[in-house]
Length: 331
Image (cartoon, rainbow, N blue to C red; front, side):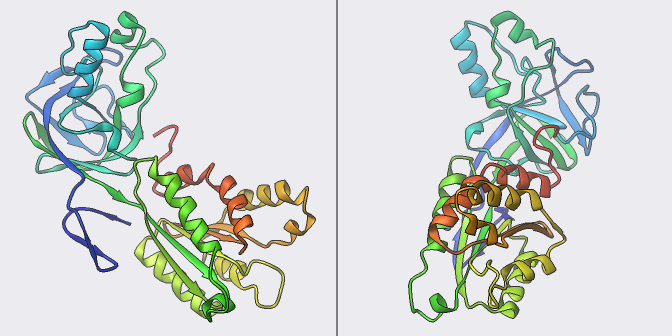
């Protein structure tokens, strides 16, 4: 895992310093909920949010942000005249495409404040905002950005905004002595890497995916897992070596290296596919948390990879956020 703060070198290639740059159009606050926020000369921000703002608190969504361009488009569509803060946003951004800002990305606001994005869009309060009561619609559920403060300070109108993209990292470890020796070509790892890349592409995450092939060797797998923990790799998949044979080493190694297991994921998959193919119940596949890494030990056939990924993909995004201490529902 890495944020693009400067030139980052990964695998011999340099990555750009930031995804996009803009500026602060306005900073806004209100002492009451459910009302438009009023522009302020500056916002003093700490770990709980903006001082003097009704939404500050330990909930993980301390600051709300909205692109001014989106607010203007909404006003044109609904025949309204809007001002900064009308959608109850703390920071009105300019020059930032909210749709390209992903979860866990960071926005650097001015020289001091940094906010980690914990939610994209959020439903209005129960009694709705003033804009919704007038038009029956609101822009915040679709285009609003919400985040937790990771670096406090002061934000002022005109400050520069830098979008630091979160670099999601995925490691695919193929466990097959025959593939390692070149007896046959790996297809399972290639398929899994493709599925992961396709899945995350539509979620404003562009993962760096590394694929390696190892023999069925517990010592080598243990070394790679520990290296992944040190590097804070987001997701580690192993393919193969999950059966009940003497050389099926993946489940045992993963369990010993894990901090805790996630038993429900694999139990559900075995029950689903074991109903029509009882041999699927012999898989010893496991899911676990190792430091800040999710680890999934999968069977080694391309078909099994597709079946397992179909189920894992339903919860993997939420699992990533949970590992980072973000509750995707509550903030």
